[in-house]
Length: 94
Image 1 (cartoon, rainbow, N blue to C red):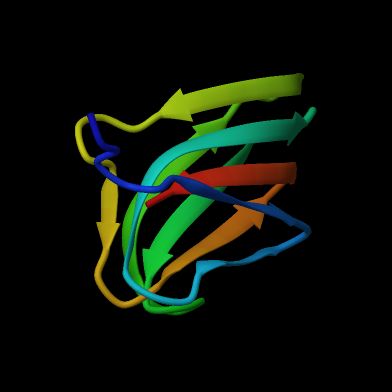
Image 2 (tube, helix red, strand yellow):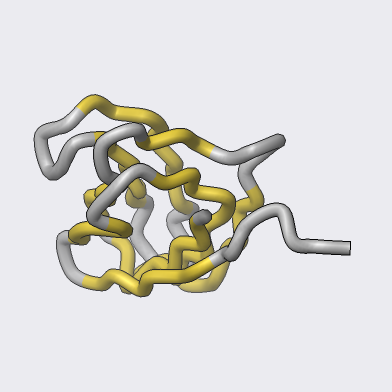
């Protein structure tokens, strides 16, 4: 039995950055929240690209794992994340 796809990961902190510099499907994200309500915005096409999803984070310090449904979020150009009031986030993509 073979694998359907190779899953990779990227950890981002601060204001965010590139998840992957090419087409990708974001399959999950592990978020470390800062204690203040925040968000993780996933974009297709860089920092000003099309918003694919906005994930709100809790107003409490801690960790949250979000598995995205089905095949994940498709970013046809490149996958990028903007972090607000988030300590760090690790993205799983294929």
